Image (cartoon, rainbow, N blue to C red; front, side, top):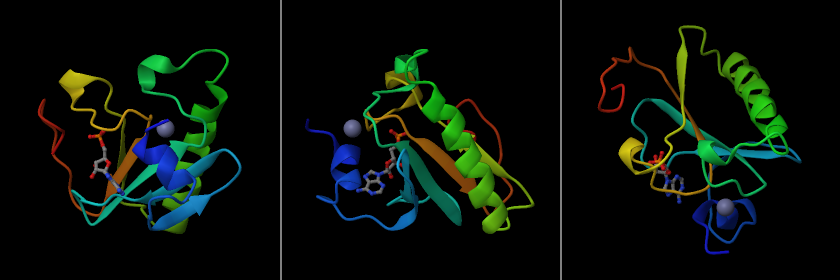
Length: 115
Ligand code: AMP
Ligand code: ZN
């Protein structure tokens, strides 16, 4: 499958790893929008939040457990934001579900991107 994030998971495309286990992979975003900006993705290819079903939803709970653990380790005690863009209107550019974790500055909120 011609999927950028599947290629990152299998090592065909290099990335800066933050965390990995049997279900998920986390890596630094190539063009960060804040001092801390990494992505957490399931190893199983799911195209977007619209593709979550009762069969595959357990990985989403696991992703949030991983995010909480990483936030503690990274001492993001002042706060962080988790974002998943789904579909064209949300600006999703990579069609393998991913959760942005953004932190390290005061984040605003707008209909554009919450920036
Ligand atoms: P989205 O716009 O929500 O689909 O987010 C896709 C994200 O993937 C963007 O924030 C990109 O900067 C990021 N991205 C694209 N290619 C790479 C890459 N090779 N390594 C790390 N992050 C990437
Ligand atoms: Zn994929």
